[in-house]
Image 1 (cartoon, rainbow, N blue to C red):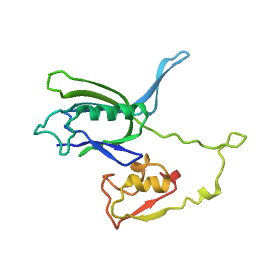
Image 2 (cartoon, one colour):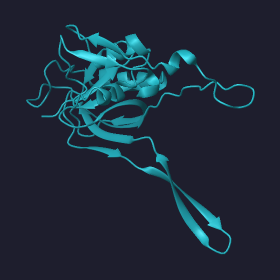
Image 3 (cartoon, one colour):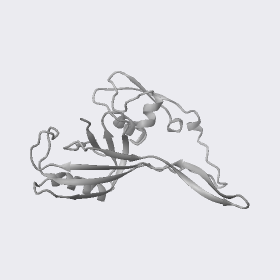
Image 4 (spheres, rainbow, N blue to C red):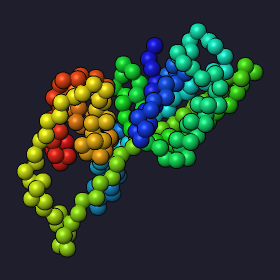
Length: 210
C-alpha cells in the first residue's frame, strides 16, 4: 500500500497517515487571462503555472484494524489536533505519496472532520495548497537589478553524502531553504528525491543556476 507522509520542514519529524486513503486529488494548471482587443474581441493569454491544490479523504481509527499502519496511535483526535495545529501555525510541510511523483511543500488550508458510524473512528477531509517561497530581488535607484560580482562567478560546490543525510537537510544547511530540493535533484539527475546514498557526490550550484 502507498504511504501518505507529512514531514515537518522545521523539525524533520514525519507523520504517517494511519490508514492509507482510498484516493487523492492533485490539481495542476496555468493562469489564463482574457483580454478584449478593439475590433478583434476576446482573446486568451496563457500565463504562468498555478500552485497545486491537493485534497485527501482519510480515516483516523480508534481501534486496531488489520489495515492500520504499524505504530498507529488509536486516539483519532491525536491526528486531528496535529493537522489543526499545522493549519493554525502556518506550518510548512512536505507532502509525500510513496511510489508517485507527489513530493511537494504544502500548507494545510483546512480540515473537516467528524464521526459517522458510532465506532469512534474519525473521518476527515484535508485540503492543501502548494507552498512557494518568495525571494526579494534587490534593485538600484534606476529600477535595474543590482549586479553582484561574486554571484557572477556562479561557483558550484560539491558535497559528499553522509549516512543519515537527506536532500532536505543538505539544502537547508547549504541554502537555508528546503523548498528547492526538487531543483537540486533535477540539477544532479536524481530521479527520486528520497533516494540519495552515502558516499555519492552532490553538486550544489549557486541558487541562480537552479
